[in-house]
Length: 203
Image (cartoon, rainbow, N blue to C red):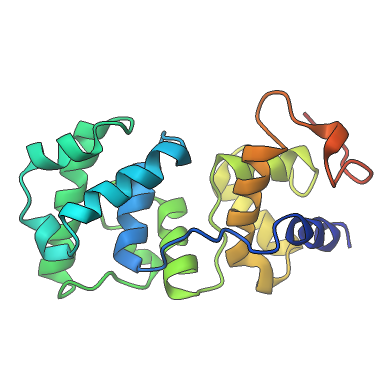
C-alpha cells in the first residue's frame, strides 16, 4: 500500500524517530502549549528554561505570572500562554491530584488544549495509539495524497483509515522532521527527497 511505503521511507530517513521528545506527560503538555504558533527551535530551549525554574505541577501552579512570562517571552503569544500554563497547572493540581489525565475528554477541558495538544500527550506521554495532526502532518498528508482534507481534525480521521495503527503515535514526529528538513511549506526539496518517485506533489 502507498501509505505503508510512505511510512517505511520516513523510518528509513529518520530511524531514531523524534528522538528528543521528553515523555513526561506534564512536560509534554506544557511544551506543546508553548509550541502553538512557535517554531521548535524556540519551543525546545524555552521549555527547558521554564522547567529548570519550575519543575513540578505544584511549582508551576504557584508561580507568579510575571515570572512565567519572563521565562517564555521568546514564544508567540507568551502573555496568554503564561496564564494558561498557571491555569492548567492549578486545574491538574486541584482536580486530578497533580497527575495529568490520560484521556482525550479530560485533556480537552484544560484551557488552550485542543486535539493536537491532547494527542501529543496521549501518544508520546501515555503510549496510546493516536495521531497528533499539526501543520506539518496536515500539509504533508495532503501534498502526498494520503488524504484530501481541509481541516486537521479531518486529516486525523482520514489518516486513521490509511495508516497501520502501530504507526499512529509515531507519524507526527516523523512528519515534523520531514516537514522541517525536506517537505517544507515553501520550497520543498523534491529533487533530493526519498519520496520523489512516488509522491504526486500536490503542492
